[in-house]
Length: 241
Image (tube, rainbow, N blue to C red; front, side, top):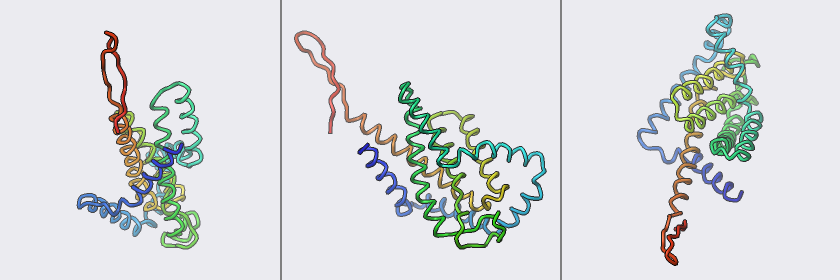
């Protein structure tokens, strides 16, 4: 438990301070995402109005129906319940992915959720359902979308362990449908879902990578050693610091 707390604190600090480590390529990527979010912000009201006008479109309705099905798992308490149950099953059965994936997901949710809650308080944007317009601020919590972030975090972590293109396409498609549902139902503006989709993906990918690095580092500390004792070959794992 103590080691988990240390690792979580280290990963949180790494994510929070990541803007200070941007190189030219990552800075350009971050600028493009922020620029796209700013552009969407200018058209949030128009996109919302269009979503309401096309609510009866069959294709749009089909996407929303899929979103309705996946959005509940984007609620962090629900996600933690599912992931906790999965972890218990993994511990009981010894199935490694069922033990590892929930832990990485929980870490991603906590890190992203902490940052997200700070942004919600700082920005205070009103939700579409409050009917005050896309540029109303003060006491709201529309930006950024928590459900969207959680769904993309799940897609990222599970995809990394699945190593399957069809699974990856399916998971990100489901996450995107959830983001569309948040806009169509008036829970969020379009710019509220774009940024957390990207940051949720980036934070989850960072958590997976850093956990993989720790696992590889720890495995490297244990080296197999062979010897002969009383005419018999002996094998042992020796830890090297």
